[in-house]
Image (cartoon, rainbow, N blue to C red; front, side, top):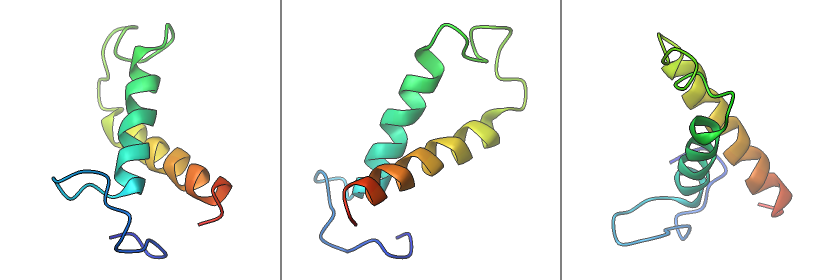
Length: 67
């Protein structure tokens, strides 16, 4: 669990937190855009950065909700 995240933020029966849900949605959006690294020659080592950016977006989404 990420600091500041409450235990009751379970999205589904698999135990996914709201932060993880938002990060997954952000990652899907990043890799499905026309300029996504996986479309332009593959990720080639950019996976960690993509994951970091996805969680960064998830954190922003949680802040926007007033979490």
